[in-house]
Length: 225
Image 1 (cartoon, rainbow, N blue to C red):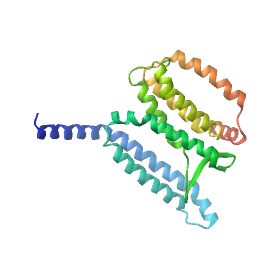
Image 2 (image 1 turned 90 degrees about the horizontal axis):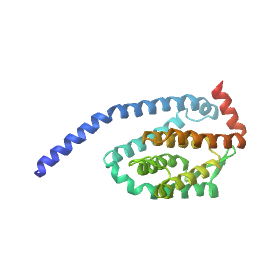
Image 3 (image 1 turned 120 degrees about the horizontal axis):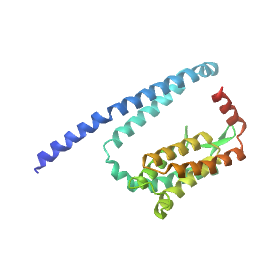
Image 4 (image 1 turned 90 degrees about the vertical axis):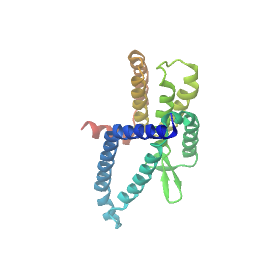
């Protein structure tokens, strides 16, 4: 096959991928717009009360959206199979950041979750989301076998360390999100429902015995009512 034919074939594949990803992109944009509306609605009265620009937090979030979409555009041009080589180093980076939170993080409302970097605050637990997805996708793409030494070392132990560090911040909502994400990936890989239910039966009582903090109980009551 000539170089020109290969180039044309690659362009056709890229065009097909763009068409197939369009519904996902539209869904992401829709969620981002809803999020921006919610942030403005919740923060504008507080900003007016503080005597600052009502769009202050909206503009900060818009900056994050711009950076995020630049990252999205860049990653869309990277073949997903190349990401597997960076999954473990990225997980180690996230663990280091979570340790730094515990050592030099900022405490707000009884939770130590943020690191101040100049004028901005960084929440390292946010990076645990892609780290968990990449680790589990990297070990489950062949099979959903859990009791595998290689998977335990390269994925499960780093994930448990991240979850433990997030739990002691405390950040229960992030912990639950990571757990549900892990369950979803496990099930998509063809995992055992019996093993999942057995694990849930062991983990849920631990949460009940530990109990919820005051603000966590308030959030639960708000959600139920």
